[in-house]
Amino acid sequence: MNKSAPILLQQLPRADLERLTTGGQILEADGLGPKVYQLGNGLILKIFRQRRLFSSATLFPYARRFIRNAQRLEAAGIATISPVQYFDLPEKRTTAVLYRPLPGATVAQLVRNGQLEPAIIRDLAHFIRHLHEKGIYFRSLHIGNIVRTPDQRWGLIDIADMSFRRKSLSRALIERNFRHFKRQLDRFCAHYRCEFPWQALREAYEAADS
Image (cartoon, rainbow, N blue to C red; front, side, top):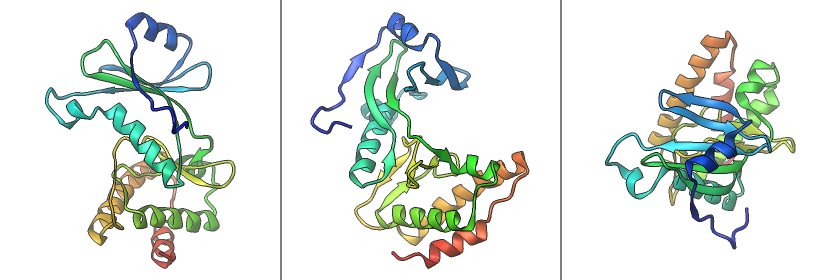
């Protein structure tokens, strides 16, 4: 990411949006339409729709938060996606970010492939502890948005729902983060009929150096 060149908002007319996404693969959609495209050049286009007329997103759009969070994670030395362009779309209260994805495998993929060895669990626990110690509160933290990169680093994706605190997270916030993580994990394991060493993760987290 080029820190000397801020990513400025650009208008993306409907015809240009259609050209951009032609031949792309829809990775995620909802009742309002596509949410995430993988384009032919390997880049990802993520669309953010503001559902409520009045919300904090009116002043600080989700796409802008997404970009800001990527920049702050990079500054903290944490691997993440690389924003390329920031768009305002023709649809009301809709913005988008074009970005380079973070290479690697999510923890969810490691679980399904039977690749979650004890050493990886310990390393994952240390990574989560590192986030908490740095005051990074990723509300949506779960096994689908933590990535193991090819160079054996950990990184984060789908990063719109995040805040950065001046101090390490409180025990209350840590436990709230883990409760969300566990709920998502239980749903995943019930759906795919897999197992995850939850107790080992928690024990490794508590044993990790701060």
